[in-house]
Length: 149
Ligand SMILES: CC(C)(COP(=O)(O)OP(=O)(O)OC[C@H]1O[C@@H](n2cnc3c(N)ncnc32)[C@H](O)[C@@H]1OP(=O)(O)O)[C@@H](O)C(=O)NCCC(=O)NCCS
Image 1 (cartoon, helix red, strand yellow):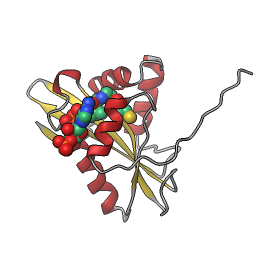
Image 2 (cartoon, helix red, strand yellow):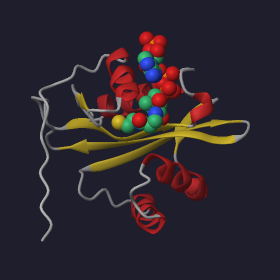
Image 3 (tube, protein in one colour):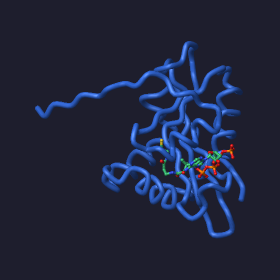
């Protein structure tokens, strides 16, 4: 298993994993977003870096990291941020997620960051446990509102 930066030829496999992580988005939305990032557009962030995990079967995980001007729970600027983090179900708990996080943290550190932020759904206990195991402290919760217009 190796961790490396995303390459253009990873597009299809990356989009499939994005789809598995964000099933509420359409495949078209996720592909358009992915193509935009691959083309170098980091909007709405300052920078984007995508790391993938690859074994002899192909891609088995990814982490989309951003550089943000600020982030909830962080006190410095800019900060690194974990935007998307995914490992194939049959490989979870074997250190792949951790290796992806280390690569993203190294990237952010190299850009001068001293903090890294992330988020998870409150009911995503496995993700919360994995974050905590990797040294991420839970900060005060944010409540989101929605109104149909
Ligand atoms: C979250 C996720 C990316 C973690 O990847 P992973 O490869 O399973 O993580 P690792 O095996 O590298 O584990 C990293 C650390 O978290 C711990 N951990 C991972 N999953 C855990 C779980 N379900 N319960 C408790 N601890 C867990 C590991 O023990 C490890 O700690 P250690 O370094 O002290 O041993 C993976 O579970 C996943 O893809 N989940 C579904 C998608 C998702 O929820 N993504 C996050 C959205 S916020």
